[in-house]
Length: 480
Image 1: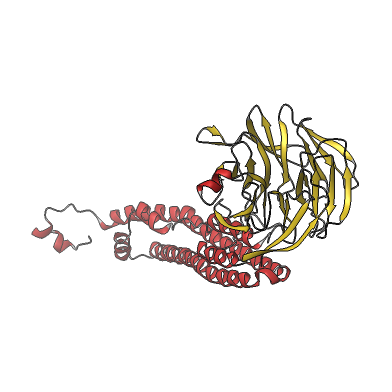
Image 2: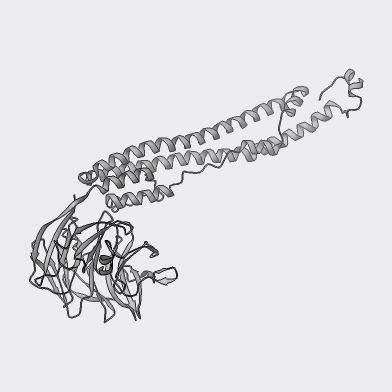
């Protein structure tokens, strides 16, 4: 504290340590110069870097929002007959969340600006005092200065980071599952932000569940004149047709009137088959332990040898890869095989330390990437996550007698993530939700007799082959 000579000699300051003002000035001046150097070389650079990061985050956020808006507009035109109302909710949700998140980003940016301005103002004042000759005012200025550690800590703001889109990504996957493949044909930038809240997903689930008809009905019945062991698979190129696989060495394409459009004959037993996006048909040979490939013109080649594992069911996933169920010595496993014969996944599914599958039969992938498998020995439907970990098991519905008689012979899924199961012994088709919980019967015993094969075509119609001695088919409409 600066005092005059008179006060210095008074009894009040007699015990205080005193020094010359010029000495204190030099000491404080050196301190201030060091402190300013620290601010200019460290704090200013950090604040400017954070300001740039904040501005970059705002730009990235606007680009992501713009990308989502353009996707919504284009897909709205393509799918407006089906999900026009759903997209209106998406746009409103996007607008609200955009305002909230942009407000947060701009608030962070303003904080950095304010702190940068405060530091720059301090440096200007300090330099003015240094250039001046008023030692008393400089001393007062220095007395009001905090320690360098406190000053640096107060000047450096919180780390500016872009918003997290991880939860929104999960919500958007749910949205895709309910609205169809909205972004399937588009490559969106990495880490995109769909900005769909869980609350909106719940509303959308309620809305989309209303598209399930309360009274499904048979729109067409016909017979193909042969009662053989059949397997059904949708045709990718013709949505109103399906492929019918005869284990007696042939595959036939039929339309909704039962007319044969195309036929392939083979010299081997057809266990199961599936059509790829390129219209090639992949066939499993259980005894020979092979997977073969049939071109659209009927030319057959060996695709893959499965070693000592016998392949049974086969289907294609949304990426065009093959899903295959195999068995050996009472243990079942699943494989995901790429177009270049590369093995993507090779897993023996387990739950609580025990193998889930003993003799897997048919399998299919749901729109949410879950894998549904029929396991014949214990008569159950096993549902696995995309990484082939356990998700759920379905063992029939109704009373104890119906559950005891439950015998699933075919399984398929639709774009709404429903799971359809043909129950041979109870003469019905069970409709399950994505988690394997029973929702309703599509047809009961008074409408169909011993359903054996099942698939959903490209138009969302369920085709059922049932036992009547003449190769009976029924086509069901169950989605409005």
